[in-house]
Amino acid sequence: MSNLDIDFLTHEVGSLRKPNAFIKAGRNQKLTDADFDEFKGFLSLVGETEVSEELKNLFTRVGPETANDKDLHNELAKWRVWYNVKYKESSGIDLIDAGEWIRREMYQHIVDNDVVSGIKMLQHVRSFDYNFYKVGVNTSPIQYDRSKSIHVQEFKWASEVATKPLKVCVTSFNTVAEWSLKGKNNFDDLMFDFIDEVFVPETIKLLDAGVNWIQMDEPALTTHPKHVDTFVDGWNYWVDKISGHLKPDTVLGLHNCFSDYNLLWPILPDMKNLGAITLEFANRDTWKLGTDDESRVAFAEHKQVLKNLYDTGFKAKAALGVLPVHTDHETSPELIRDRLLYIQSFIDDPKLVLAAPDCGLRQRSLEVSHKVLKNMSKGAELAKKELE
Image (cartoon, helix red, strand yellow):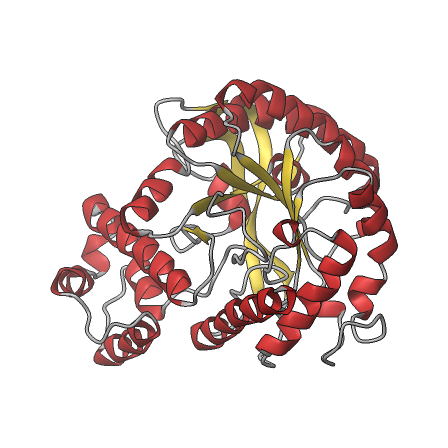
């Protein structure tokens, strides 16, 4: 049996809050004693007590004069990935990703780098609350430097330290096209240009590097209902183009959160090689224990359509979010257990039921995130025992 083919597999969706020491170092700001003390608090979460001499030396070198020191920032980036992996593994979850601590923002990471050209970055705009991202406009044909990669180095660094299976999170082509200003182009042409020029070669590089689980992040999916069918065409086109590099156990996952799922359910059976779905549910659920419809109201709303979907042969692993991400209120292991058991009651096969937060936990402190991820791991174990 594959180490990913288990009951109630646990994983984290993606972004976590970055330790302040890494943020300040990335901005070439001198670290203070308070920054080092705070970083030691982070280290305690992963079972360490002191900053290693190598990392301490890197931190102390940082300052305004290191803005163009690529070697220094490359070494710091590797440490960011390593500690993100250690953090997640120490929480007990089964499937690990390299995290997003070397990424500025999910959209900008794809379009604002030395690999992709054709998008001109403008000023920051607000996404929600006090969160911002730079908007980009398509000013010239999308091009991809095939001598480089956006994600492969991150995966390789994670592979050096990970003791558990790895996935890679990729901001997907529909969202990148939706969040770009089109200039004189239209959505369909821009999305397919991104698929041809960026996502096909980048995915092939990831697969050839040994990645066997790719999570395609699509927060913008369903925001324009008329584009949903176009996304399915794009997905199937992308899968056809990379099919020669897929292995029998390769998982191509779709992550979509805070969305109109009534637009999503009909398209899922039409998506080729769809191996996993990761969605938001806990945010709309109650805090009561129980496996009845009244306690699990968010899941009950879509229970019948999902039951029909799986009863007719749909086999993608389903992570219907069991952990909310917009509150510090602690989700207990027992509540995680009950949510998983309720999902399993209509999907039936516990190997198709995954435990995950609704979305990335970057709005929560690292202490809160670690605690609830540990609770999620414990909750999955409790759910397994209920099936024994």
